[in-house]
Image (cartoon, rainbow, N blue to C red):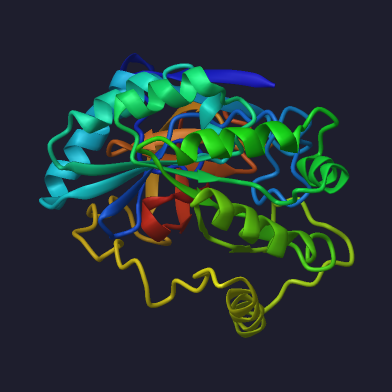
Length: 326
């Protein structure tokens, strides 16, 4: 798989692509995606991440100072205190500049909170202490089963060690970092595991955020697994809440994400524009073009880097631009 390093000199903006850079959904939380690299092959992965992916042709790694410059610009535009959430279509702890990223985010005056998603497999006590010292406020730790064989199966790897992740969760729970354990509930796969995860979180003083299994066009799909509607999902969440005495339904709680100024769109759906081709796309037969300081992903594109081509915008939600040749 090709690895594309994104820095200021590359001429690739950090807004416009879903897989790297920054995503603004019109709230006080911005998503920061420094890398697409992942060390697992989770059966339920919504992005089909990992080295064995059959659909991705390119991984992206963003230079830390370039990323921080963009965060500062967006935070200043929003004019309020924001949460910077380091997430990824892969695994954030594969990013070699993670500590520097957290430290840099904490120095931006309008960034009031820094959070991070992780599967935990690349953490150790030294890294946890370094993240605490850097100022990380919250870790959302993905644990989908406590039984070893089930955990290995769901991770898609034979080296996944749930005992290590549990031990590190206890370490995190004793730091200043707020710990949330965030399993994906996959009906008929880990039904019995979810209550055990909740009780483990309760034991170590962590909070729990249960996620609903979803299927997307390019996600990994588990055969014979039912994708529940939200009513069925929350019905079971409320059952587990009563059984364990843990708060699990946050539809009316926390209240930390609020609406905020949204970065103005550069393009509209069906608009025709010219783009300069700068990089290979994330999926096969895609390329990334640039126009008006935005990235545009072009489907079914065999143009060469350096070409200038005409495209039509076919998707524009949250300034994530998808196009086709016009």
